[in-house]
Length: 347
Image 1 (cartoon, helix red, strand yellow):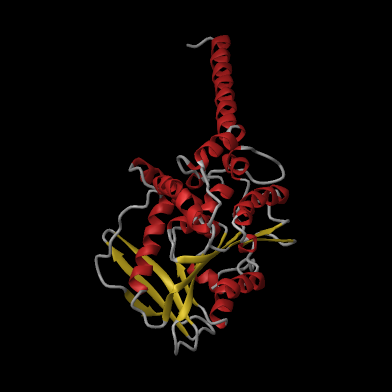
Image 2: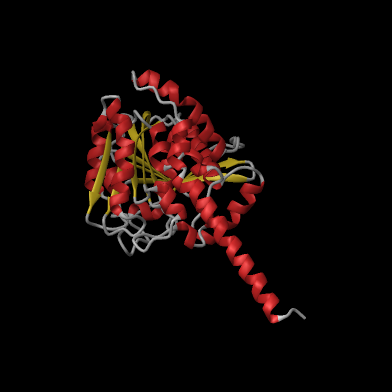
């Protein structure tokens, strides 16, 4: 039987070592981030072409972090009519990809006499493709933005991604064992859907945008650097001071370290890919951040600071207007009109 004083010493030792490890890792991830990332990024601002060439090695480094698998279609794209309220043309798409499938809602505007632009509208962690169109959205966080997009003349592709933290955490464990990631799998699914939709005469896939809320904003940030078909993007309620958000508990915002959302942790993310650095891979493509001051996912002054660092890359190329922060007084929600205006301007 262990003696009480020995048991106490063992527990005290373990707690001390845990604190030492947290201090060490926070120092590496947060305090040393700027120096580490600054040494890895070698951006050339002399022209847009030279800038894009200069960030290519880091784009490939990000691809290795996300590591999307090589999913390939193993059957034809299936389409089933799916009536949805006031929308004139809605389909449920399913594309077989071996053991899994890519699935999404596709909604078309009433007038498709000529090809229309496509917006990927990505739902959040507690939602579904239908929520994008106002269904199962009791808190009205999405404001039926998919419906507004269709009425504005866009086709809307609302992909189905795995919902809820616990299921995503379970799959994340399995994915990491294989050296891949869940968002990488979900990126590959959407890419194969875009491939399959290339033959649809109603769609202009030279004009593709993406707009996601919360976990959909997460997808927008992580995927857009690796998918050049996305010409303009909007991230609602995810952009953040990433090192703090992941590793520094603070009463002013929720910190992922203090949650059970294991799916939010990607191996290698904070080596050099805080939000302002990761999204420098989207530059010069237009990118908007929507964030509410009342949204507890972040402390809004830190969002402003991180966004200023992102916008600096655009400014140094003479295209500062292609990066925008819609900082509003609301909460964790879509801002319909500013998003529509942004897409109309650039898509």
